[in-house]
Amino acid sequence: MKWNAEGFEVVQSSAKPNGAEVGIRANDGSSQFTLLGFLFLFPEQAPMTSEKCRDGVLEPAKKSNPTIQIAATTEMARSDGPPAAWVSYVGQGKDGKLVYSVRGFLAMGDICGDLEIYGDDVNVIKDPNLKKVWGSYRFDPNYTPQFNDVSVYAEILYQNHMYQAAAPVFEQALTKLGLGNDMANQVSIEERFASLKLDFDISRKEIVVRDRERRRRHPPTYRIAVYCRIAMILGNNDI
Image (cartoon, rainbow, N blue to C red):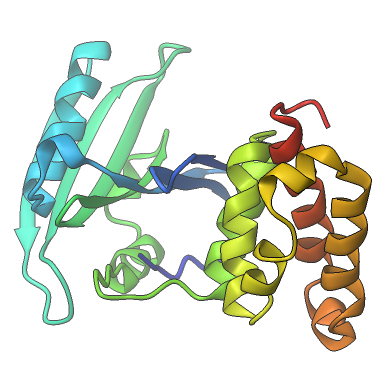
Protein backbone atom coordinates (compact mmCIF):
# COMPACT_ATOMS: atom_id res chain seq x y z
CA MET A 1 0.00 0.00 0.00
CA LYS A 2 1.40 3.43 -0.86
CA TRP A 3 0.45 7.07 -1.14
CA ASN A 4 2.15 10.44 -1.46
CA ALA A 5 1.30 12.97 1.26
CA GLU A 6 3.53 16.02 0.89
CA GLY A 7 3.69 18.22 3.98
CA PHE A 8 2.77 15.42 6.40
CA GLU A 9 5.27 14.13 8.95
CA VAL A 10 5.00 10.76 10.69
CA VAL A 11 4.63 11.22 14.46
CA GLN A 12 3.69 7.70 15.54
CA SER A 13 3.87 4.15 14.25
CA SER A 14 2.35 0.92 15.49
CA ALA A 15 2.26 -2.75 14.57
CA LYS A 16 0.89 -6.11 15.63
CA PRO A 17 2.94 -9.35 15.57
CA ASN A 18 2.85 -11.99 12.84
CA GLY A 19 2.18 -9.47 10.10
CA ALA A 20 -1.33 -8.80 11.40
CA GLU A 21 -1.13 -5.00 11.17
CA VAL A 22 1.13 -2.02 10.63
CA GLY A 23 0.09 1.61 10.83
CA ILE A 24 1.29 5.20 11.02
CA ARG A 25 -0.02 8.55 12.22
CA ALA A 26 1.11 11.77 10.53
CA ASN A 27 0.35 15.47 10.95
CA ASP A 28 0.48 18.22 8.36
CA GLY A 29 2.69 21.24 8.93
CA SER A 30 -0.10 23.35 10.41
CA SER A 31 -1.48 20.49 12.56
CA GLN A 32 -4.80 21.16 10.86
CA PHE A 33 -5.17 17.64 9.51
CA THR A 34 -4.13 14.21 10.76
CA LEU A 35 -3.46 11.20 8.55
CA LEU A 36 -3.84 7.59 9.65
CA GLY A 37 -2.71 4.74 7.43
CA PHE A 38 -3.17 1.06 8.30
CA LEU A 39 -2.54 -2.17 6.45
CA PHE A 40 -3.97 -5.19 8.24
CA LEU A 41 -5.20 -8.75 7.89
CA PHE A 42 -8.97 -9.29 8.02
CA PRO A 43 -9.20 -13.12 7.69
CA GLU A 44 -12.65 -13.40 9.24
CA GLN A 45 -14.05 -11.40 6.32
CA ALA A 46 -12.05 -13.09 3.53
CA PRO A 47 -12.28 -12.99 0.60
CA MET A 48 -12.17 -9.24 0.94
CA THR A 49 -13.37 -6.44 -1.29
CA SER A 50 -12.70 -2.77 -0.63
CA GLU A 51 -16.38 -2.15 0.01
CA LYS A 52 -16.60 -5.10 2.39
CA CYS A 53 -13.56 -3.86 4.32
CA ARG A 54 -15.04 -0.36 4.59
CA ASP A 55 -18.32 -1.65 5.97
CA GLY A 56 -16.56 -4.08 8.31
CA VAL A 57 -14.51 -1.25 9.82
CA LEU A 58 -17.25 1.39 9.92
CA GLU A 59 -19.95 -0.66 11.65
CA PRO A 60 -17.98 -1.05 14.92
CA ALA A 61 -16.90 2.61 14.68
CA LYS A 62 -20.53 3.77 14.46
CA LYS A 63 -21.47 1.61 17.43
CA SER A 64 -18.63 3.03 19.55
CA ASN A 65 -19.46 6.61 18.49
CA PRO A 66 -23.22 7.05 17.82
CA THR A 67 -22.66 10.69 16.74
CA ILE A 68 -21.08 9.59 13.45
CA GLN A 69 -23.14 10.70 10.45
CA ILE A 70 -22.21 9.36 7.02
CA ALA A 71 -22.10 12.13 4.42
CA ALA A 72 -21.32 10.01 1.37
CA THR A 73 -19.97 6.66 0.21
CA THR A 74 -18.65 5.84 -3.23
CA GLU A 75 -16.63 3.25 -5.11
CA MET A 76 -14.08 3.90 -7.83
CA ALA A 77 -12.53 1.38 -10.21
CA ARG A 78 -8.75 1.37 -10.62
CA SER A 79 -6.76 0.15 -13.60
CA ASP A 80 -3.80 -0.90 -11.44
CA GLY A 81 -5.29 -2.68 -8.45
CA PRO A 82 -8.54 -3.29 -6.60
CA PRO A 83 -11.29 -0.66 -6.73
CA ALA A 84 -11.33 1.93 -3.94
CA ALA A 85 -14.21 2.34 -1.51
CA TRP A 86 -14.57 5.82 -0.03
CA VAL A 87 -16.56 7.27 2.85
CA SER A 88 -16.82 10.77 4.30
CA TYR A 89 -18.46 11.42 7.64
CA VAL A 90 -18.64 13.76 10.61
CA GLY A 91 -18.83 12.97 14.31
CA GLN A 92 -18.04 14.38 17.72
CA GLY A 93 -14.57 13.88 19.09
CA LYS A 94 -13.73 13.19 22.73
CA ASP A 95 -13.69 16.93 23.40
CA GLY A 96 -17.19 17.36 21.94
CA LYS A 97 -15.95 19.19 18.84
CA LEU A 98 -16.96 18.06 15.36
CA VAL A 99 -14.40 16.00 13.46
CA TYR A 100 -14.61 15.70 9.67
CA SER A 101 -13.14 12.58 8.14
CA VAL A 102 -12.49 11.05 4.73
CA ARG A 103 -11.41 7.41 4.50
CA GLY A 104 -10.39 5.25 1.58
CA PHE A 105 -10.25 1.45 1.63
CA LEU A 106 -8.38 -0.90 -0.70
CA ALA A 107 -8.66 -4.63 -0.14
CA MET A 108 -8.15 -8.03 -1.71
CA GLY A 109 -7.90 -11.57 -0.34
CA ASP A 110 -7.53 -11.22 3.43
CA ILE A 111 -5.64 -7.88 3.35
CA CYS A 112 -7.20 -4.47 3.85
CA GLY A 113 -5.74 -0.98 3.55
CA ASP A 114 -7.37 1.92 5.42
CA LEU A 115 -6.23 5.50 4.79
CA GLU A 116 -7.93 8.28 6.73
CA ILE A 117 -7.48 12.06 6.83
CA TYR A 118 -9.43 13.98 9.45
CA GLY A 119 -9.59 17.37 11.14
CA ASP A 120 -11.94 19.94 12.63
CA ASP A 121 -12.26 21.72 9.26
CA VAL A 122 -14.89 20.66 6.72
CA ASN A 123 -12.29 21.43 4.03
CA VAL A 124 -10.80 18.01 4.68
CA ILE A 125 -13.42 16.80 2.21
CA LYS A 126 -12.57 19.23 -0.62
CA ASP A 127 -9.02 20.47 0.01
CA PRO A 128 -7.19 20.22 -3.38
CA ASN A 129 -3.90 19.21 -1.76
CA LEU A 130 -5.60 16.33 0.04
CA LYS A 131 -7.19 15.22 -3.22
CA LYS A 132 -3.65 14.65 -4.50
CA VAL A 133 -3.10 12.23 -1.62
CA TRP A 134 -6.17 10.24 -2.60
CA GLY A 135 -5.10 10.28 -6.24
CA SER A 136 -1.80 8.62 -5.30
CA TYR A 137 -3.38 5.98 -3.04
CA ARG A 138 -2.61 2.49 -4.38
CA PHE A 139 -2.55 -1.13 -3.23
CA ASP A 140 -0.61 -3.83 -5.09
CA PRO A 141 -1.59 -7.29 -3.76
CA ASN A 142 1.23 -8.91 -5.77
CA TYR A 143 3.99 -6.76 -4.29
CA THR A 144 6.84 -8.68 -2.63
CA PRO A 145 8.19 -6.88 0.49
CA GLN A 146 11.81 -5.77 0.13
CA PHE A 147 14.51 -5.30 2.76
CA ASN A 148 13.42 -1.78 3.68
CA ASP A 149 9.78 -2.87 4.07
CA VAL A 150 10.58 -5.81 6.34
CA SER A 151 13.16 -3.93 8.43
CA VAL A 152 10.79 -0.98 9.00
CA TYR A 153 8.09 -3.38 10.22
CA ALA A 154 10.65 -5.07 12.51
CA GLU A 155 11.84 -1.74 13.90
CA ILE A 156 8.26 -0.65 14.64
CA LEU A 157 7.74 -3.87 16.62
CA TYR A 158 11.02 -3.22 18.43
CA GLN A 159 10.16 0.40 19.23
CA ASN A 160 6.88 -0.78 20.73
CA HIS A 161 8.78 -3.24 22.98
CA MET A 162 7.64 -6.40 21.16
CA TYR A 163 11.18 -7.79 21.04
CA GLN A 164 10.35 -11.46 20.61
CA ALA A 165 8.02 -10.65 17.71
CA ALA A 166 10.66 -8.39 16.15
CA ALA A 167 13.50 -10.92 16.22
CA PRO A 168 12.34 -13.28 13.44
CA VAL A 169 11.28 -10.31 11.31
CA PHE A 170 14.76 -8.83 11.57
CA GLU A 171 16.13 -12.19 10.46
CA GLN A 172 13.79 -12.11 7.46
CA ALA A 173 15.18 -8.68 6.59
CA LEU A 174 18.75 -9.94 6.92
CA THR A 175 17.90 -12.91 4.70
CA LYS A 176 17.00 -10.45 1.96
CA LEU A 177 20.57 -9.14 2.25
CA GLY A 178 21.96 -12.66 2.05
CA LEU A 179 22.86 -12.90 5.75
CA GLY A 180 19.85 -14.32 7.55
CA ASN A 181 20.22 -17.99 6.66
CA ASP A 182 23.86 -18.02 7.72
CA MET A 183 22.92 -16.56 11.08
CA ALA A 184 19.97 -18.88 11.65
CA ASN A 185 22.09 -21.98 10.96
CA GLN A 186 25.08 -21.00 13.08
CA VAL A 187 23.89 -22.49 16.36
CA SER A 188 20.85 -24.61 17.27
CA ILE A 189 18.24 -23.25 19.68
CA GLU A 190 19.36 -25.74 22.35
CA GLU A 191 22.96 -24.58 22.04
CA ARG A 192 21.87 -20.96 22.32
CA PHE A 193 20.10 -21.67 25.58
CA ALA A 194 23.21 -23.47 26.86
CA SER A 195 25.62 -20.71 25.86
CA LEU A 196 24.00 -17.32 25.47
CA LYS A 197 27.36 -15.52 25.45
CA LEU A 198 28.60 -17.70 22.60
CA ASP A 199 25.43 -17.01 20.64
CA PHE A 200 25.84 -13.27 21.09
CA ASP A 201 29.48 -13.38 19.99
CA ILE A 202 28.70 -15.40 16.88
CA SER A 203 25.71 -13.24 15.99
CA ARG A 204 27.68 -10.06 16.55
CA LYS A 205 30.51 -11.32 14.35
CA GLU A 206 28.12 -12.30 11.59
CA ILE A 207 26.15 -9.06 11.78
CA VAL A 208 28.83 -6.45 12.38
CA VAL A 209 32.08 -7.84 11.01
CA ARG A 210 31.13 -10.11 8.13
CA ASP A 211 29.96 -7.34 5.83
CA ARG A 212 31.23 -3.90 6.77
CA GLU A 213 29.71 -2.24 3.71
CA ARG A 214 26.20 -3.39 4.60
CA ARG A 215 26.79 -2.45 8.22
CA ARG A 216 27.58 1.11 7.13
CA ARG A 217 24.36 1.28 5.11
CA HIS A 218 22.03 -0.33 7.67
CA PRO A 219 23.63 -0.04 11.16
CA PRO A 220 20.44 0.03 13.31
CA THR A 221 19.06 -3.15 11.77
CA TYR A 222 22.16 -5.20 12.56
CA ARG A 223 22.49 -3.95 16.11
CA ILE A 224 18.83 -4.29 17.01
CA ALA A 225 18.65 -7.75 15.42
CA VAL A 226 21.18 -9.00 17.98
CA TYR A 227 19.26 -7.51 20.92
CA CYS A 228 15.96 -8.94 19.68
CA ARG A 229 17.54 -12.35 19.15
CA ILE A 230 18.72 -12.42 22.77
CA ALA A 231 15.28 -11.36 23.99
CA MET A 232 13.74 -14.19 21.98
CA ILE A 233 16.19 -16.70 23.47
CA LEU A 234 15.57 -15.45 27.02
CA GLY A 235 11.84 -15.79 26.46
CA ASN A 236 10.88 -12.37 27.75
CA ASN A 237 10.65 -8.72 26.77
CA ASP A 238 12.81 -7.32 29.58
CA ILE A 239 16.10 -6.92 27.72
